[in-house]
Amino acid sequence: ATVNFLKDQASNDPKYMAYGVNNKGIWKSGHSLRMIRSGAAALHGPDGDALNAAYGGVPIYPTYSMSEQMPISQPPAGKIDTFTEKPGSVGVPVAASTVIVSRSTLRPQPY
Image (cartoon, rainbow, N blue to C red):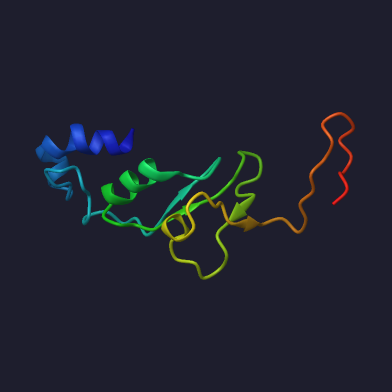
């Protein structure tokens, strides 16, 4: 929705153009974004590319998360942009341990 708004509406509106949105819907300057963190699942292909381009190349950090536990995974320390470096990855687990459990018993499954 954000990418479409920038392209279809903000790019032709003097109010948004004054903030730095150009006539192609790219917002390279005038914002203070240092990174974009996507949640819930990995951000794939065209959606991530469009989001990255819309904000002038701001790094995207794909993560896996839930409202109750944000984030469950994140890119390894020191990685700048895992979206382009390792597409489809959501990083490494943040929790001390992760286990796969049986749906019926909720007991941990063997390795």
